[in-house]
Length: 164
Image (cartoon, rainbow, N blue to C red; front, side, top):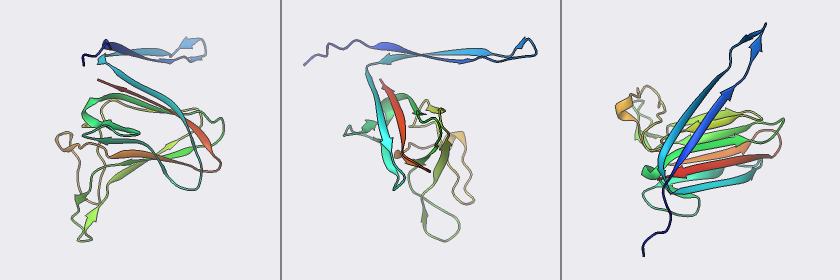
């Protein structure tokens, strides 16, 4: 079967507007990402009881799971006006030098009310430290998943993913 979907260009524009004492310090940055043929945009309610997987990355497609090499852009926005959420970014397990066995390097991001977390490439654009291990650009690995948990009260998170 031949697809009838045409590739498109995703345009991401970030605008900052602030004037202090009559001086404009605002800026606007635009990024165009070509060859997009899959988009997911959903709102997920996350409670305080446990971390919930928002996105999983693999070599194959599944429910809420994306082919890691195909993801070109992702954004998670906290739609709450008061409460924050914790994002856990899980990296593959690696050995550590502490003698404690295998470590799970992860990053935790505090996503405050009304703010967004954006990432371009989950397959090679992120690293996390594990004990004394140093991360360099050449050692970045693919993420396994991103999960979230609300801190004080349930929050709605908007999850936007664009793939090639």
